Figure 1: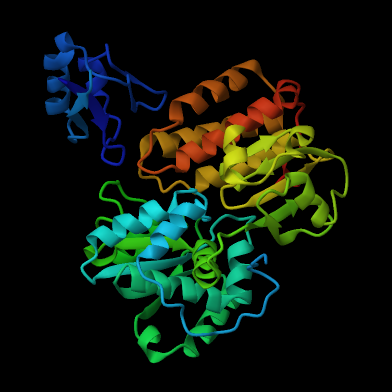
Figure 2: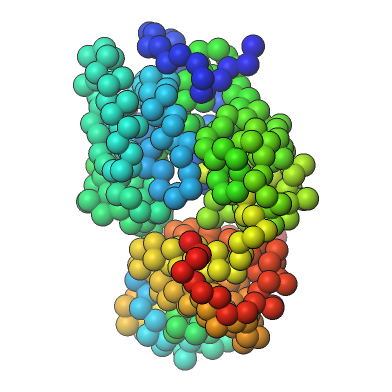
Length: 72
Length: 378
C-alpha cells in the first residue's frame, strides 16, 4: 500500500473564483462558466506542494486534498 | 401464485411477525429501490439496522416528482394498507421511533387514501406516524432532499456523506424508501415470495396512457401493447423518464424490463416511465422543452448544474427555434460530457444522460433541424 492524495471540490461551496486553476493548471481547468474540472486520479508527487497551495488559497475553502489508499 | 400490487383488494390484516431475517429474504429477492435510483434495498436496510438504537426514522417516500410518472400515486390510492404494511414492517425490523408519510403536495387522492387507511390501523402503529407534504419539485423526492426538507423545510439536496442512513431526520439513522418498494416488501413478508412484477407508467403516443403492473420479464413492446398499442408509428421510446434514455423503437421493443437486462444495455427503468414519442413530433423541440424543465429544476446550489444545464437548454432551444448550427451541436456534446458528475447530487448527471441519448438517437434530426415554432413543444 502506498499513500496517495486526490483532489476533490465541494460543489456547493465552490463559487467559481478560479484561483485553483491558476495555481494548478496541470490538474485543474475551468469550464465555460468558470468552475473547476479536476483531473481524476492520484496527484503526481511533484505536484503535491502546488496542490496543497491550491487547497489553502481557495477563497471559499472548497478544495480538499484527501489521502487515498491504493493497493499495490 | 403470482402476488400482485394492483387490482387486488386492499384489506388490512395483522402485520406478519417478521424480524431481521426479512433483510436476508429481501437480499435473496435482489429487490432494488423503485423510486428511480435503483439502489439495493437490503444494503440500505442493513445500514440503518446497524445504526439504529431504537431511534431510527422511516420516510415513506411518495413525493413522485417525475412529471410523467403516476405509479406511486395510483399505488397509494389503491393499496394504501399494503404501503403502510411495508412501512410498519420497516419500523419494526429497523427499530424505528417514527414513520413519516412524505407525499407530494399535489397528490390529494393518494394522501387522502393513505390517511383514511391509517385511521383504521391500531393505535400502536398510528402513534408513530406524522405526515408531510413534499413540494412539487423534481428533486424533492431525492433522499437527501427529503431529509433536508423534513429537518429544515428546504427540499434541496445536501452534500453526502453523511448519508440519511448515517444522519437523517433529526440526526437519526433514516430509511427513505419509495412507496412501491415498501409494497413489494410487504407482499414478500406476507407470501414469502419475491416480487415478480413492477409498476410502470406508459406515457405519450399510446392508446391508453397510465399505470400498468407488468411481469419483470415482460418486454417494453408487451407493455406498450397492454396500453392499447402505439397510436402511430413511434420514433423513439423514452425508458426511465427524464433521467432515462431514448431508445430506437426496434431496439426497445424486445427489451425485457427487469433491472439486469436493462443494465446490460446501459439502461435503467428509473421511476418506471415508458414514453412513446410519435414520428409526427419533433424530437429536437421535445428535447429542448425537457432540458428547459430540468434546468429550471436545478436547485441552483452547484455551479456546473445551475449554469451548465441552463446553457445546455439554451443551446437546444437555439437549435429548435433557429435551426441547426454546427457550433451548438459541438457545444452540446462537449458540455454534456463536462457537466456529468459535477454536482453534489445526481440531478446534472440525469439531465445530461437524457440529453446524450437524445443527441445520439436523434443525431440526424439535430444535424438537419429547421427553425420551428416552439409553442407546439412541451
